[in-house]
Length: 384
Image 1 (cartoon, rainbow, N blue to C red):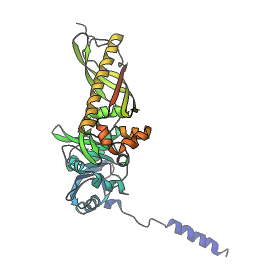
Image 2: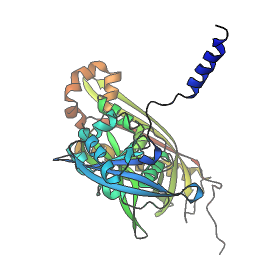
Image 3: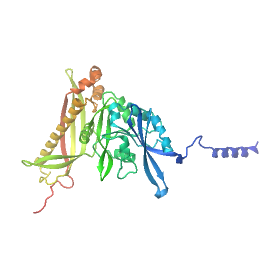
Image 4: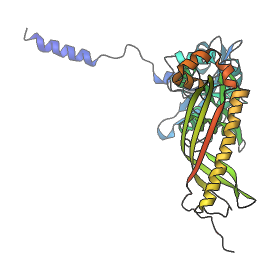
């Protein structure tokens, strides 16, 4: 027994060292899919995939995007069939973005996005976009100036949301939650193509507004900034406002948003529901141009702050009119607040919230304060 024990132990050690995976796929047989798009749902799904083809190695390695499109009876079936023209198996865990065309968004995005939510191969952190005035295939075939692929370009933009205004990025898991939530309408950021030195370059700007899973309209970049303010999202927004200086002189002054506090409350008085919004905004002066006044002048500073409050009150009123009267889509989640803070009112109004939301009175109070004026509160003076 003692003589056989060392042999048995050696055999067990050798067996442990020889174990391996029960299955494997060689990396040379994979094509990394960085982006997925759906341009059509009926009568067949039109699916577009941006893959990345690599050649060489080390510092001489080259990355070339490859865009393929196909049709199928579902997103997963079409995506799988792309392995045939590619000649390699698509590898999905590294996907960055998922694009849907305006046509798909108008018809309803659930058939297109359901596979992405359900798939065990695609991460829930994939960014979701709606294409505006172009298709997903056209976006993937555009030429970003710095990134190796369009998907990496859009991923970089989404990650810089705090410094690039004009949109609110959304991932797959957040979209899934937005669809499931009661009393709030979903939104998605939009991608469009712009001409830059002869090439079409994709940019992210604006917001697609939904009722249920159907898109009902757009918000432009400025309106998306107002949406961010009302949602309490801090972005590095710049607002150029013609500011009255002196008696009848107006100068374009650039203000940067540096602080944002918003409080939204539902109010039920005598059976009449309303919502109050209190917005407290802080700004830094970025550019004054030829404006001759100093922010050390308290009277001038108060005048500027009053003009800022008037401008933002006007913009917010326009925004509320568009979302309530034109789109009738509760993207700010007034219904969600009513449901949480006034449950008895929601039980009374929730079933017909669309009817009540359209004419819901909104009390608005906007306060603006200029807290910084850069390195100097004085205007730039030129000696004559």
